[in-house]
Structures are given as structure tokens and as C-alpha cells.
Length: 364
Image (cartoon, rainbow, N blue to C red; front, top):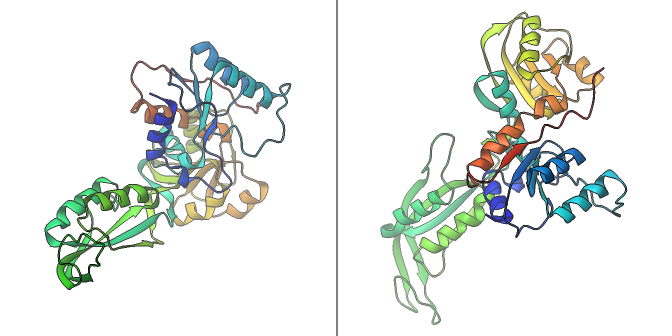
């Protein structure tokens, strides 16, 4: 399989359109025409990760954090970034990153963290808005079923755990075909009335090209009448953070001990506990201070994330048990989730290795 084919399959599940405006997910460096010979997964693109890829015969590094966040004005081969670029070009290694788009995936970063903790009945903590659109089209009655099924196969019609969702209403469509037409029904130069079905169905905005392609391929008319509306509805399949329940309530001290064991960490930063028992927990792998109030509204007694500031703890005190477990520590589980996603795409014979990179920050 070529790199570009793998990237396309990844992006079918984790669209680049999901990433934040500041982000740079996707191909970082390399030739997308190269065949994938082996994949190394790493949280960061480090010299160690690149050396490991060379040693293990992996010509593709899939990282969580992008190698490039900003444009380069120069490439100095004597520094770390330049050295990595030089090695990747010389060894024909491609780098691909799945960052905030994978943060928002329902099986992504926060889901991996929630799974490590053992949260039950997990839900996305902060579903995205503005990710859905609605297609409205009009089709002759006899062809309505085939058009609907084509739209559903292209990704339309999913609402929560339901699929094949649409609204259909009968009516009369009218048109007059010009001289340079080949009408499916009616004749040239005459106003024609045709019994039609109005079909409405929602779809994720990243599926628009596929949905329209299906519409044009299966609709019988030479000129297809359709409308697309942007929706403000929440999209339950995309968003930041996870909230779920513990299998049994724990005291604050017991929960901290439980968390250290589950995440294999020695220390955490936390505020004064606000509740006697913790049963509902919210998590957001990486920097998640912006979701503190969302976690409170979701009914969580504890919120686990990273990179919290002094005033974050102050603002949360008395409302929720706030725990900073570390950026690396809350995101490292995502590599296994990435590997699982890619393993479903790649042939079995391609080696896939998770880099044993350690945290950039040491605790002494």
C-alpha cells in the first residue's frame, strides 16, 4: 500500500477538517507515492524516534504531535529539527501526524485515556457544533429508494446510533426542458409536472463530496435540484474529552491512588477535593483547561487533564476535583489507539512498532 492510500484511509475516519485552526495535522515530510514498509508510532517526532524507525526498517512515522507547527524560514542541519529532516530525506522516511483531529475522534486520545482508567458508559464531553449539514433533493417516486440508499452508503443519514435516517414528502415538481436538453421525463418546450419525493438527510460536512457524487450518480435527472444547509446541531461522533462513570465510587485519596496505578505515574497535581465520593469522571488528554466548566456541567466530580495553571485550580476549587496528571501521561495511551486504527487498514505483514519514547520532562 502506498503512503497516500494509507493517509486517505486514515482521513476517512479522522478527517483533517476536524483539526483546530492552529493545527498542522497530516503529512509533514516525505513522498506519499512510496510504499509503506513499516510504521513507527510516536507521541513526538524526536531524534530517538527517527533512529528507532531506521533501525526497525519503518519508513513511516505516525506521530500525535505535528513535527511542524509553523513554517520554516531556514533548515539548519546542525540543530535537532534540521537533523531530523536530513535523516528522513536520506532514509526516505515519511512523517504523518494526527493531532487535534484525533483528539476529537470517538476512539481517539481522550477515549484511550478513559479506557485506561476504566470509565463505563463513556460519552464525548464536548461534542462539536457546526460539523453537520443537511441535503434536500427532489426525485421521481420510482427512483427515490435507490437515491436514498446511495446517499446512505456515502455517509448521509446517521443520527446517533441510528442510520438510514431521512425525511420524505410527496409533491409535484415542475420544469420545462429547453432545446439543448435530454429530459428524463416530459418533452422539450413543454411545462411538465412530475410526482416527486422530497428527500432530506443529514451528513457530516467532511462527507459532502462523497454525498454529492452519490446524488449525481444515482439521480435520474439531467439537472439535479438540491439544497445544502449548514446546521448548528451538535455532532455526537466528534468532540473533545470523555465523561463516564467509575465502576464504584471512590474517596478522593483512593481515587488518586487508583489513578496513579492505572496511568503508571508517581505524582499528580490537584486542588482541594470538593466532594466526599467520586463516581463520575471527565477526562481530556493533553491541555484541557478550557473544558473545566463543561466537566462541571456534565456532572463530573473529578476532571483529569494536563497543563493546568495556578488560576485554573483556584477557579475550580469547591466545584470539582481537578487533577493535572501530565501532558505525556494523559496522551501516551493514544498511540495504541492509533495503531489499532491503522492496523485495520494495513496488510498484516507490515511491521508496526510503538516507540518507547520517554517524557521530555523528568521528575526528580
